[in-house]
Length: 184
Image 1 (cartoon, helix red, strand yellow):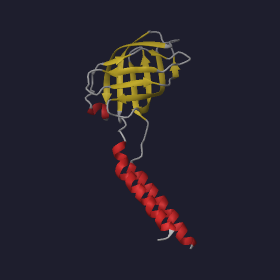
Image 2: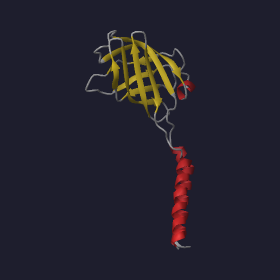
Image 3: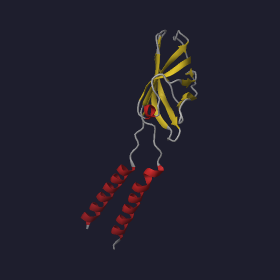
Image 4: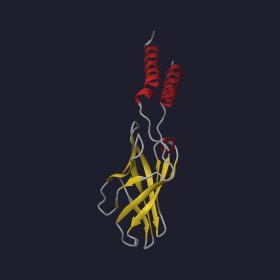
């Protein structure tokens, strides 16, 4: 057996092993989105860099959030939102406390999109945690008016499946093999 065939067989074996075992070693990322609402202070948001958030509840939940039992009215433990500069991560910004496998959210970045006396819009990134799942990065948004406030989070990571990586590897391997075959 020539060297090229041995190499092709060895790489194929490695890719097959990766396909069979990689899915078992990989924990799941948190999928879905969640929306929260609550009361906040101060009422005048003109120069606010700090929001005291109280009475936070779930407004909407889908994906893993809904499957875990988070529904309309579920009470959330919410810490104050300090977005003064220089910004320091808030760990956690909020957490569930009534579920067996709780969720919590760490706020890692914040940006003020708009702000005046009666409304504020903040956006940024953060990390969602859940018992038994991988920490999952995502994007969040917070909006408050003189009438209500809302916080939303959604996963922003797409993770390739092991089988897709194996197919990509086999395709590249086939390309290399065909190229070498054509050179002979």
